[in-house]
Length: 222
Image 1 (tube, rainbow, N blue to C red):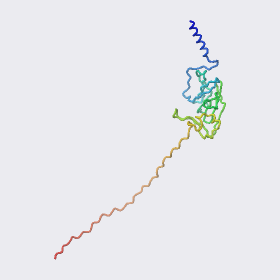
Image 2: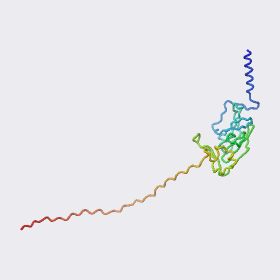
Image 3: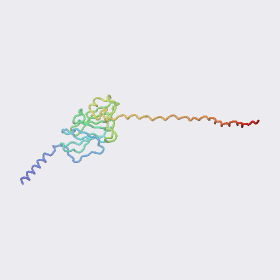
Image 4: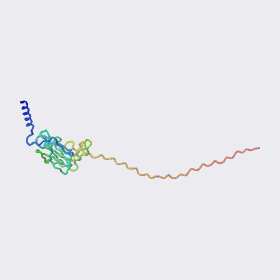
């Protein structure tokens, strides 16, 4: 009996220790995103020192699944509503030393937006606009055979603050950056039409002429 009582007390104590601090988001055993969520990153947007999961979907919404004490993820919550411009890539402090731990950067065709937050919400704290001739392009295809999004244009046109923010995979000249298609060889021109020539008629060879008749030898008698 004392053994059973001791075990019950120990279980109760462990259960009490395992309870998350007050105000922690509720954890879910199964938290999933829609099939159009293909861009993911991580940032501490709740201020607890643990990176939270961030994703962007095809509509341009940015979602946050808060980290619950490193055990599980909370349910998804929207931290940025859709915008007209498509989000081409996202990245956090793990890829860019210029970002704080509570920052996540959104890459759009003509700019980079940095969202920041500490209470499970986020607001734009920095926007880096790109000049004409410097743009991000969306990827094409899927998997290893697809082309990943990347920067286009001469690196000299890119503002330093943008290059300092970008991870290597998104910088101009990176292996994943889109490149201009190779020029295709021009089709060979067909040869000019030739004018058929008509051979001038030649005179038919003259028929062989008969040799003159040879006189028969004569015999003279005396």
